[in-house]
Each structure stands twice: as C-alpha cells, then as structure tokens.
Length: 328
Image (tube, rainbow, N blue to C red; front, side, top):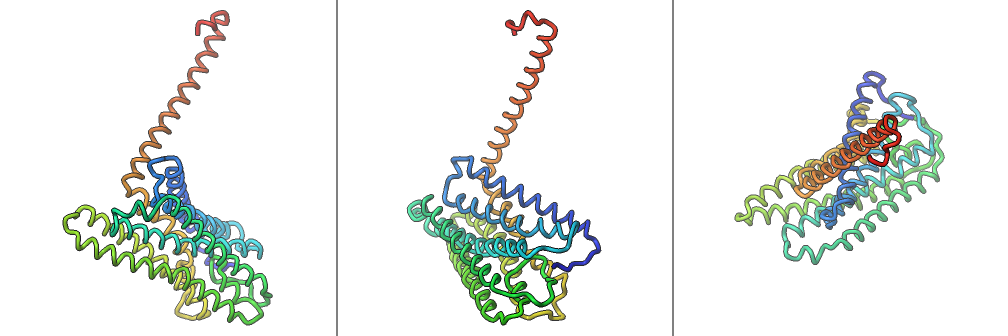
C-alpha cells in the first residue's frame, strides 16, 4: 500500500534505525529515572513522564513499520493499517494536549511561583494526564469507527508512509465529506487548541521574564528553554498542518512525494528525539538523578562481577582442597 523510491533504501533504513534507537533510549531512560527517583516525583516530571510515554508510542507506531516496508515488504494489511492509524492519531492528539498542559505548568511556575505548590499537585497532575489520555483515545476511536464503515474500491496505493485517517478515507467509494469535517474538527480541538495555549502562555512567560531584571540567570534559562521548545513545537505543528492541507488538496503537482513523505515522518520522529534533550538532559534534577542511577548501576555491576569471581574462586579451591571447604 505504500509507494516510496527504491534507491538508497538501506541508507534510509539505517538512518531511521539510528533515530529510533536514540528516541527509544532517551524516552525510556526518562521514564525509568522519574519512576525510580523519589526526588523527581513532582508535577513537572509527572507531565514529562507522560510526554516520554507518548513519544515512545508515536515513534514505535510509525518507524518500525516504515523500516519494515523499506527492507522486507512494501505492503500492509488492512487490520495492521487500521491499528497503526489508531495509535498514530492517539499520539498526535496526546502530544498536543500534553504539550499544552506542560506549557500551563511552566506558566504557573514562572508567573505564580509562590502559589505553584497549591495550584499544581501530584494528584492534579495525574488527573490531568488521565483526562488528556481519555480525550485522545476518544478521538482515535471515532476515526476507527468512521473508517470501518467505508468500502474501499479505489487504488490501494497510499502516497503517505503512515496510515492516516484522511489518506485512507480518500480511497473509499462513498462520499467522505463527513470524514473531512470530523478530521478538521479533531485537529482544531487538539492541535489548534495546543497552538493557542502554548503561544498564550509563552507570551506571558516572556513578558514576566523581561520585567524581572533582577533574575537574570533564571530569565535567560527560561528564555532558552522556551525558544528550543517552541522550535520543536513549531516543526510538529507545521508538519501536522501540512498533512491536513495536502490530504484535502489531492495530488497537486507542487507537493512532491518526497516532501509528503518527509513531512509525515517529521511529526513522528522530531518530537521524540528532541523532547528528552530539551526537557530531560538539560534539567539539573534529571542530570543528578541520571548520575545517581549510573553510579548505582556501576556499583551493582561491580558487585555482580565480584560475586562471580568469588564463586569461581571457591569452586577452584574445592577442586584443589576438597576437605578444606569449611575454611573458605
């Protein structure tokens, strides 16, 4: 069902594999650190763990299938395609919602630092994560129900490397105006809402930073974090809007298959790769937790090696002096 150029497939596969390993290791490490370190059991890190979990779902939904199509077989069954579509749209909605909640969390932390611990608690953070997850599941299931009602009689070749709701709907025999309206509505309620929330909160944060001249170090750190986050968020939003518009314009000449392919992939692999670096490794508490984890891992590894050497030594002594085992 996919069509992509056959040249440079091995190079493309290796590139995607490297991206997947980096994203998987980075996000999985964040989840383990936040779950393991009691010092990280705070609302901001609860949101970060949810973001890392969402990124794992998103990149694991798309890239392994794309890599499989590059090397093994360039087809996908309808059940597998529908499953990928559900998880892909869950990822898009969840990523949008969790980025919005994290932007609000940073806004309260910067603009109302003395009320932060009262307004944002661990219990409320977990409740917000459950709420946005439920909303994302509802959007994905609505797409699934609408697609399952369609009869596919047109060409079964997809120009998109990922099974997307409107890409599948465009191959149906029936009129899909309702599907287009539902798709645009879901984008407005997820990505559109996220754009409004992120821009509004970041404008307030910038205003607060520029009016607190005495906190020069905190201001520069907040500005740097906001700018890097906004760049990644912009790539995510632009790629989603490109997909939405291109699927409704049809096969226009000025949108090449390579551009469509890249923009579809950008939404999936750029946030999972960049988010652990922006929110995780650049955070002082995450760095300290990672160092403690590595020290504990190194200590456990050394202790394990010591036990192995000790057991081997005892066995060798038993072979030489079987009557003096009680002395060891």
